[in-house]
Length: 35
Image 1 (cartoon, rainbow, N blue to C red):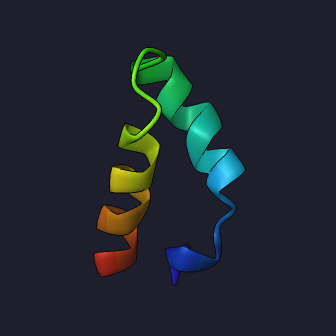
Image 2: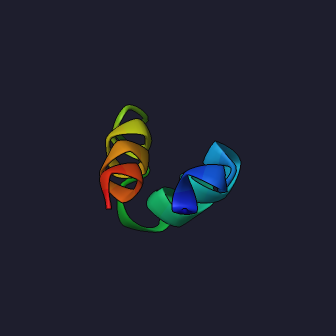
Image 3: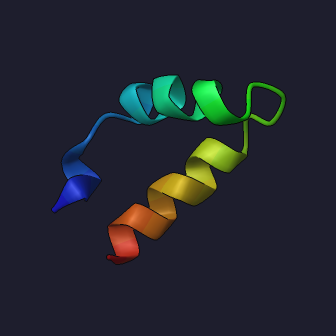
C-alpha cells in the first residue's frame, strides 16, 4: 500500500531523524513496503 509513496517524501521524513545517513531512507522504504 505505502509502496506507492514517493521516496522523496520518505527522504524528507528521514531527514528529521537521520540527516547523516542517506541509505536509511531506502531501508525504511523497504520496511514500509513489507508492511
